[in-house]
Image 1 (tube, rainbow, N blue to C red):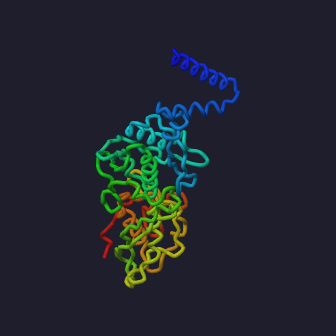
Image 2 (image 1 turned 90 degrees about the vertical axis):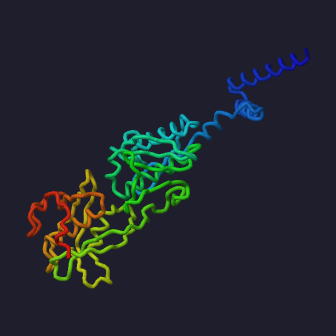
Image 3 (image 1 turned 60 degrees about the vertical axis):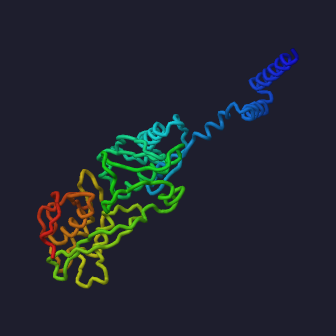
Length: 333
């Protein structure tokens, strides 16, 4: 009987606490006491604690698209890693809702997520559509890094692999990218450059007489948000000092306004300085030094040139400069 009375007093006391909370009297104290009692009794955790536990940081691109902006997000399916991964990928793909003055969606417009497949030991494979293969090197690294950094925060996700239409994602050396996890990321918050990966590329210079192309392997470090295509073109201005038989096919005032990869085509907008011919170098050699170098990167198989945003049918003595150009190895020595 006494036990029942004590239980009744306890219920009455808790009712008073609840009433005082609703009335705004001592609300903070009552709420804290109720939360502590619930936690100590082993009945569960508070709502606030649950929200903290299920909240992760999504790694969007910053406004300059050269790093990341962390934005908190509360998972709707925190106990299902695959569903949670779909959530995250959807948010990172929402180019309409997540392009602000401070950050932008990191899965670029037109890039489809085909599937999220769970693998053994907490690993997942993300399969993208064919358009993923058309991304520039810098954009691809940005996208992939943002996805990995975001997904690894989900409970049960220990590593990510990537594929494109069911085939393993390859790097620029045609080697599978492989598993990405905490050990493969450069920093926790992306402050350091993610473009420090060095690549071996084949550049096409000219011989001393300017009538033949000579290929030369060089190492390039992709950095500072400059597309790889732009970097290799600028490298054509300066042959390696150790290669005495090589000559630049481009003038020293050569400038690239922009390069962009789309539908297997590299679109190159040059400044009008390209019209300044190099002494003793044929225009055909100048043009195909650029075309062969770009197509050898395997990001595109044809090149479309413009000069200051306009198509120009003739570059000095070279006809049809405004057409889609493919590699020409018959000019190589």
